[in-house]
Structures are given as structure tokens and as C-alpha cells.
Image 1 (tube, each protein chain N blue to C red):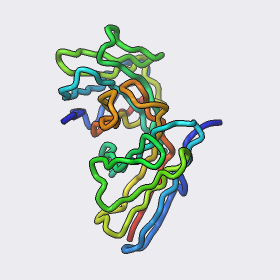
Image 2: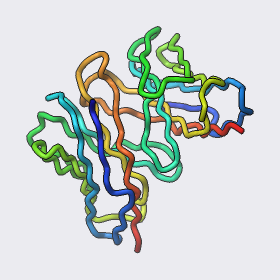
Image 3: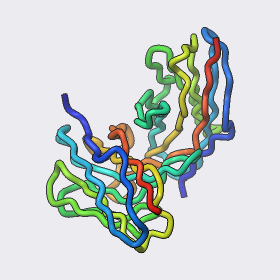
Image 4: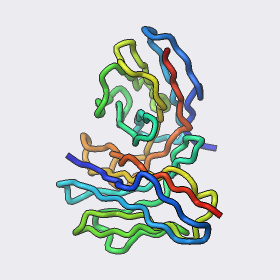
Length: 114
Length: 117
């Protein structure tokens, strides 16, 4: 079945370490997104990419980096510069740009940094 | 700048009753889309329903319907015949476009719905 795979489901890191969250999709979608969710809050956009080798900053890009070398993959690196990295991270994709395209989400990665 | 507001942090509804979850939005664009997502405790985001700004009729998907009032900039989700499995967080979201640099979905803070027997 087609879908979006995020791994791992739970991730633990020490403060000061960079960590990369994986996101792979086999839906043949052009656009991919990373969102951050804090407890009791909505989703905030970190980065998004509409085509391979191109991406744009979202509302809270500081302390994060991404790459889009393949259509299927959009990994997110949480760097040591991110002051509050502990959160739930959701990856999403959509088939085309435009106002009527829903985003399809992965199951998320819960990152804990101590 | 676009903005989504959900003023109900939590709602309770009895099984088999209908419930309305409120959503208001703010945008200067004439072309936009409104979405509702469900997030169970497991964390995944499930797409429920979509309403386009130019759609004249309210969207419906099974037990879900969207009460779209464009002049009031509201897009309330109505769940009919609530089920215990409807207990979850519900998010309203908006997407402006089409447009290369505006292709992103903005979310509200969500409403936690609890269905009781």
C-alpha cells in the first residue's frame, strides 16, 4: 500500500547532538512538508519542498535543515541550534500544489532531547 | 497573513448526538481551501473533508459536513451521529493558492472532542 513512512517512531538524543528524522513516501507526490507539534497545540510548518532539489522555509525553520535529493525522500535534521527540539514531528506530502490538495501525513516521530 | 482560529479547546458530546466544531479563518486571498483533520491519540493525521472558497455547496463526507459561511469567514465541522471512535483532536486548516510560494497548509490549535456513552 502507498503511504508515508516516518522512522523511528520514538527518538531520544542528548542535548548538543544533531539528529536526522527520516521521511519516505511512495505516493509519487511532488510536494513534501515537515511540521512540528507541541503538546496541546496545532501544527507549525518547518520546511516544505515542491520539487526535487528545492525547498522553502516555513514559519519555524531556525535550527532545522532539510534536503530533497530524491522525490521519495525528505529528511529533516534537528540541529543543536534548535533551542527546544523536544516535540512531535510530522511529515506530509501532497500530489500537486493548489488549494484543493489535501496533505497526507505519516505517523510521526516523537523526539525527546535531554 | 492567513490565520486559523479554533476557540473551543474541548467539547463533549453524547454518543449518537451531533456536534459542531467551530473554525474561523482570516485571509486576503479570494482563492483558498479549507480542510479538517482528525488526530487520534496515536498521533496520525487523518484527512476528513475539504471546502473550496468558490464551492457554492457545503461539503459532505459521510457523517461529516462543513458549514461554510464565506461572509463570516467560518468553516465549522458538523459530525452527525457521534461515535465513541470520534474521540480525538480535530484541526481546521487553510491553504491559499494556487501559487508556488503560498503552497502550505496553516493549522488552528485544535479542538479535543470527547464522546461519551
